[in-house]
Length: 280
Image 1 (tube, rainbow, N blue to C red):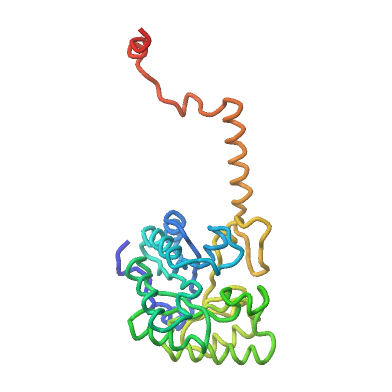
Image 2: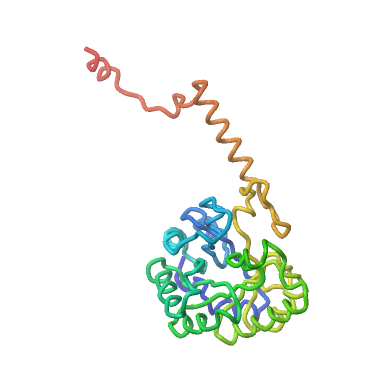
């Protein structure tokens, strides 16, 4: 596909203005990214959710820069059109603006991402401004921020009380003023997300935030039914690949054990005369 058709960060604001919903999905490997890109998704997020769905952690906290870099490279290789955004993992941006720029720069320079995402509002404004000044596009993330899960007391809806809602609205405006090209709003009441979306010129990407956002993002493993019994209320399963994969694996195991696989179709022959010479 021609490079002029590639989605850019500047396209996000244009899509919001034109009323076109932005589509975003997570991906962590080459083939998934390739398939999503060919399907026409606007943006691919290499989320730190990879820690839970790819590496088996209970939270996103153990994810390292090297983890995100490794998976970002694979996703970029599979992508021609979609905008690739890399998550900044825990403690890659909280330490200082200088360290933030250094780590984010690696995600662009070594990973090939076009933009980075970092969690938080007013408290990460210095980091956000430093990134923008360095020419690194930033996607903000408000509401349920998984890297603060221990402080929040678990995976809970945010912004239901007035003080939380007012802070979220203020944080959204501050991040827009700082230069963020968009915001992820996670697990907040739909009316609040709609109010925030209407107050901003930059687009909002919702996950568990209702249809009033300017776009939506889901973790692909959840959408495809590959996360076992784990299924948050805001997820809609578009397939049940987990069960289908288990069925296929079970059939393979059975056919190997009972001698049905491989068969003649899956095997290679050999010239009879050559074979005879091998045994004298």
